[in-house]
Image (cartoon, rainbow, N blue to C red; front, side, top):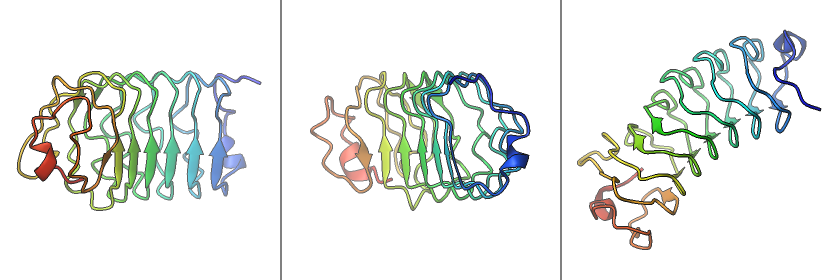
Length: 193
């Protein structure tokens, strides 16, 4: 069964729902109010649909949401405030989309533990990871050349401009020499997520 959008007022019908999975259902759009009444929602899976754009307030009022899976869609860009109200968010997957540039969309998600960004078309990441004390994993595998991660490191700016980041970057990992290129080797001592 395919549906291009979620049923209207779905949030009112299921306002106590904690887990919503709408994977592989053909969703093309989500409206700003689709989830606004689902204040108890902890897990939201919208993977492997046809989503290209998300309203900047698509996830407002979801302060209990801990896991968000948007992988396998056709998302090209994200508004900087899209995840700002997801203050309980721990795991997010944006893997397998068409994202080229990523601004600091996680600036208010201090509880984030895992970020999956693999298999996109990322060229630019402008995210400050240094204030994410809970962060354990950022997966950037299989992207375009990643360049200029402003303020990602407390002391230096990393330039990934000629690199294919082929492995996940893990917290406190000082052994990154196995990757396909040397990330201007300041990576080894100074990059802590």
